[in-house]
Length: 92
Image 1 (cartoon, rainbow, N blue to C red):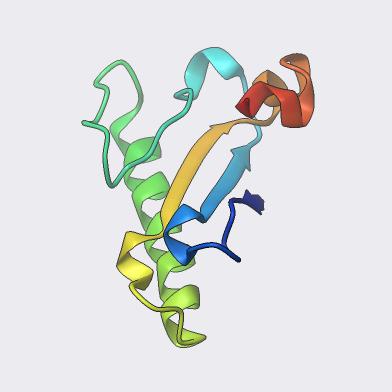
Image 2 (cartoon, rainbow, N blue to C red):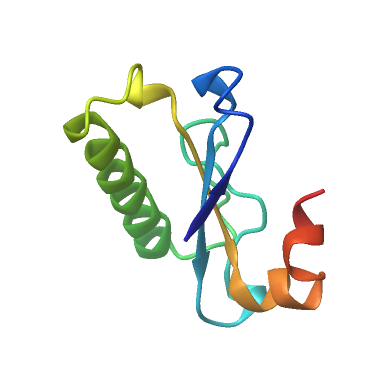
């Protein structure tokens, strides 16, 4: 898990990424469960687990008093895909 964003300018720019282990072909790319429609090519149990992980991340921000914690962007992708795509550069 890592984050980026110009939070010193405005906290709305925060993006948290959760990188998932497993075959990239079985994992969605650039997936934001709060924004994207569920892609039915993927296992519904996987998508439900991703939603639970997003809820956990948001709850942690809420517990720490982060303003508008429900608006924190939490994205999911394959760790292997990110590594193959150049690590940090994959997200540019």
